[in-house]
Image (cartoon, rainbow, N blue to C red; front, side):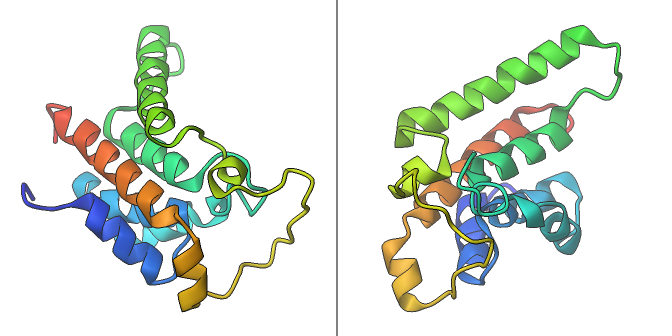
Length: 155
């Protein structure tokens, strides 16, 4: 899997019609031994900035979920590991923020905060993909996640 490019895989998932979170999580799933459809189901509610509320970017959420699968705390009382996870997650989020200026879907897409969007997803047309910068966010998040996952000794 050394020549696997999660960024390209994530972009391809997006163009297949998956939401941003699904696209990233599904692209990172093979590195984690998670099957593609399980990853798609797990991240299904997180697109559009979480259920199209335009809050936290779904690409970031997909990346963080995968990184948690790679190195997440599994003992409730393990405060040290929990703190390490939070630091690692913050660093990943900061990389994304440094690259794109925000972690918020609404801001990344330039959507007026006063605009209320329905939960109805937009049709995936050529125009949709042409006006959406999401593929850049997805590729970056997937590549950052891949780098983190591969940096763990178990992977």
